[in-house]
Image (cartoon, rainbow, N blue to C red; front, side, top):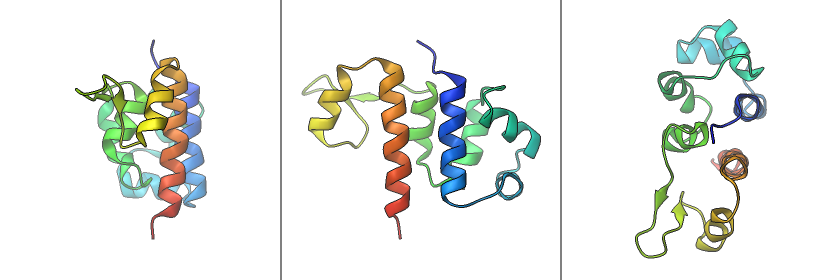
Length: 120
């Protein structure tokens, strides 16, 4: 199932606001127009992989995490357990594996935001 454009936009906006960074500042450092970023955050546009690559670092996301959250990349699957791995604790990864894809993406997005808040 394709990721919900509103959910991805909300995650991107939450991260930007928590940094804190304005749309103008994100536009300046990423090279993506402020109006395009605004439409992404509102769920009116779904970002291409190229756009996600441009905004990942300024928003303190790992590029792979953001692309996976958007549905452009599949989570890596452990050859031992068959469970998607995202750098998560194995217990958490096992629990997430039983959830629908949209729940997995949302949880990974939230965890990414929390992870970025703990970086020095």
